Length: 286
Image 1 (cartoon, rainbow, N blue to C red):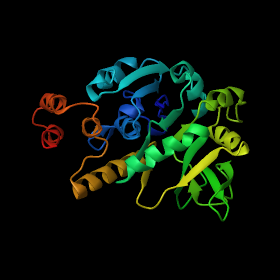
Image 2 (cartoon, rainbow, N blue to C red):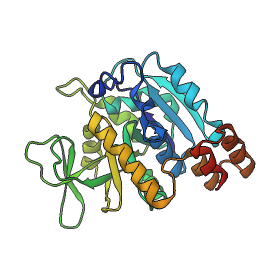
Image 3 (cartoon, rainbow, N blue to C red):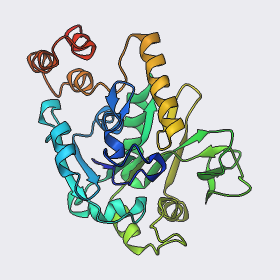
Image 4 (tube, helix red, strand yellow):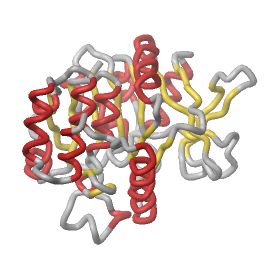
């Protein structure tokens, strides 16, 4: 399985702070926003990663992340020339995906769970014969894609931003698909707002009876850092978890080390480059 991070949005909801800095490079507490979706893919055991970026942003992304070899992964980049919707990621990344299955993560979504490894690896296994997405409970689901379940927990319908939602479960920005997703994305017609909608991809898998929806429990945290308030809330949430547990969220060096992508010598070398920062000291204590 390969991974794609869609990080090509203009961040207009965050103007003026995103005028000088691309949204995925903004800090969420102590790390750049892009670290959080990268951590999701690495936790899922995915090491071939494509980041889809806006025009003119290749330099800042590469200076921060390089080719990923320091974390034992392979990162490449593609430019999305214009915002054409989430499902366009599969067309931009078609050559990268090749004949593989793929996990797509939105660049401004933050996920955390103590059970993250098991949840993600299970979702990846399910995607071999279709699609796997998640259902996450929110109080007001009207701004999201909403999934309706039957009494047995099977998905019945999905509606994008419904006025009268049929459930409180929304589909957050992490999706696992088999290789059919490329042809499905290619067959889509733009929506009324001129975009290729990820909901339409999920609806096609549902029509084929190949959509698996995993309902997440309340111990799982999902945050959309796409607005100023949400960005602040996300930073505070990360700080609270890290202060409470003593463990860093989205620490790419730690994930790479624990997964065996890099060795102890590599870890200490990376920590040494960070000097006496708290982040560097944390790595040295692993």
